[in-house]
Length: 536
Image (cartoon, rainbow, N blue to C red):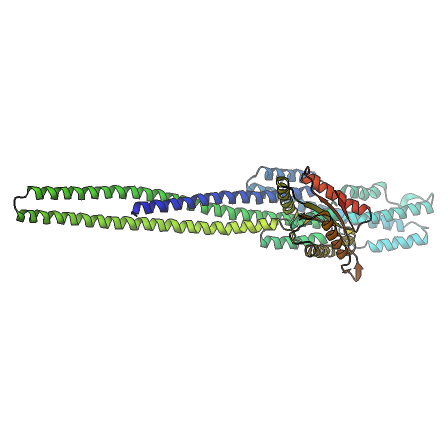
């Protein structure tokens, strides 16, 4: 096999590697865009939580969502977030001033009521107790609502007890209505109730961030679930924005650096391939010239033999010609060695660059796979999440419609789960979800898909399981969970499930099938909970 054919084979192999690297680059860009889209959607949803706090803030957040939609440069997004952060901080300061003003007005109104002569003894005692309770300022305006209601009830009691009493001891109308009116206006700020915080917490759990930023997010999440005042929640939301943007920026820079290195390496390899091809063509031409020279020298030597008149003359001429031929052959040998070495060096250099490129691709690919795996996993229960369920169920439906088999969908919901959260706290609720998730996995048949659909709702997908076997297993699971010894704050609590199940029909689609199983679960709740309802 000559050098030219070897070089061609190596070039073909390198071209194959280049094509593979280009395809890998395209896939990496695709995956990065998907990850970016997920983060952008979450930030857009999170910004909607603050809607109604302030008109200017609403406009700025709307502009931020528009920037995300248009895939604006990160510098523009950072600038917009900086402006929003300042607005939120200003609002936090304003909120503190409003709380301080409300505290002063409330105590002033109470003290003015105390100055009225002839108040009933029980009313005076209750009023004194109320003012003692409100010596310290509250954390949020919303906390003054029940106190204001109580104070207004005292005023009403005083007016009824002293009908016709001069009103000079009472607050002027402007002073009396001002804090109430202010509270009504500011009540829009206190939108961060438990259900919204839970939704934010669930969304945070599904974010596929880096390990460092995930840990930061967990710390903020704990604060978010414990701090209830509006200004504290707003500060935590600012921190969440900062962490998400920081992770987005790191991921963006990481991908940008990788793609830059990839592009540079591909360009270098491409140039090297072109240079190698040019060198090969030059080498081939030089070889042809040397071969022609040798052929000419051989022909010349043959002619000399034919024309020679004596043996001595033949010997002399042949010796001279052979020296020329030997010199040409030596030149040819050196040139071929040099060409071969140059080609080998270039091929080795290109091979090293391609190997380096493949190593970078593997590292980046592993990172993307890990992030994708995390994005399909529920952070709390370690079960498959809603996205994983949607993907698995869609594929199962495709297989079912291609070749029908026994495919069943089950929806499970923990009964009275909100009561656990409200009574014993979110930590107890989280622990309950983890125990239930682990119990479900251990008590269903092998091969059953188990996922957390959201909140306290779980989903199961059974393949090749008949109705009777399905209902028997679900009833056994329900009874097992009802016997679990849950204990919160030294109180024994019984946890039960409402379960709805159905088999997929030939004319079903994903939504129809899920709706039927979901309705079966709600029917179980209406009929007394702690039971399994199967619908055909």
